[in-house]
Image (cartoon, rainbow, N blue to C red; front, side, top):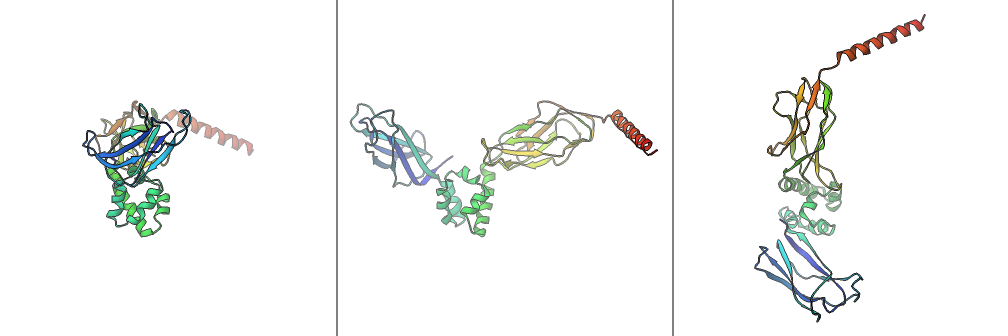
Length: 288
């Protein structure tokens, strides 16, 4: 739920045409059905080209502060046209939860610089890169306080709701051999633990079964990933590999194909030994 607050401004893009908006109200409400409260009344000037093919001219309206989930523009009049129109609108503000995070740490002196740097969205702010945050919060003690609070907030904001395969397990492998890496992806920003396991089997899957989800950085689209490495089976059989959340075990996925673990090929070992014996014999003949 996004609440936009403080340092708000509204942009209306118009052309020099009598049908363009003249007077409008900016209103807020706690429900989409209202009742609506007027934040401010504004008058828009006629500017720009009369040609509809030319780009419109943005006009910026400021001087108001409010907090609400729902906003609307209530048009009161135009410049004398038979109908009313405009090219586009833009609304710019700050998610109030960013302000609250700094206030509860008594470090509100940093909120303006963070917001002006483009981090006016709460979820975007929580995913800020550590290096960028250090540039904005230069005091080491203040940085540690803010960073630790952000880590707590991430766990609340980005919980595990979905899991998908990024890299599936292989279909066949010899017993004891290391599986190629298995990769799953989850919700953006989620840092919970996920666990790999074998469905309906007592077979042991050796290796680190629990891995923490990590963000994929600034890649688009953004999501979190977990990589399971150096896994292996000590018993022969056919298995279904699954992954689930540790804190949310109801969120899980099963591999769409089974994994067959075969016994090691003894013949191959015997052939390798035979070649080694032949090579040793040839080396011995060269010494004669």
